[in-house]
Length: 327
Image (cartoon, rainbow, N blue to C red; front, side, top):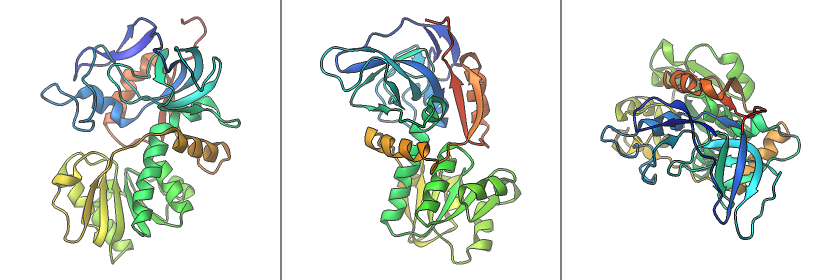
């Protein structure tokens, strides 16, 4: 089968041919039709400077090379492993694989445990949109619960134009939070259509200063989806008022010098099929839109990963794998 893989951490992802995987007991094999790109895909492929699992996934199992990139997918079950299984051959499914050792989703086939974050694609939801939903949607929903459970009413989202940010903006607005969307460039119209109360352009100056101009008393909560250093994160957290929270998806909150009275949180995704079902129903009903920026064939995935590194994503990048003639 075709796959996009790295032969070692920090090596360039390349199109390779690998054996078709065989499902173990309790697993299903999915013929992948679409995969979607997440920043964690290239972060994982990079690893850390010492060649170990990357800091964004310190809990990841030891890598097996070639390491296939990607975690999100949608497709059809084409083989069932031994034992009882909640799926059947032919089922339309989507989900998130891990990241386990060596079993990514930028490939023609992937084996997934039936009790992992995998579920049926509901009627009314196309496979392309389903593939774009798992990581971004689940992260957004779980970040929002962290904010709502603490009773906060305003939310600054750094990197709001990307996949997680677009979902988070919509879900937060549906819960009556005031969303300040920080993006690169003029995205006021698009972010406003997703529910942002205010949009600020981070290329024009520090986000914290722009936030203070629209929220003089500070913001209740920060969700920083971009900053990969404690210093950059702390600069955004300067907009958070005492008693608020500053959440990082890049694992840098714990080392950041935050304003007095601001609680730093390093977010860790907890994928589960129940949450996938809820998000899929919302997408099928049109309540949750999943903006897709670009759709590319599998062989173009390495360039898409490079493009994502530069930042400024506008929605999701979807990788197309379902081509007649490939086995």
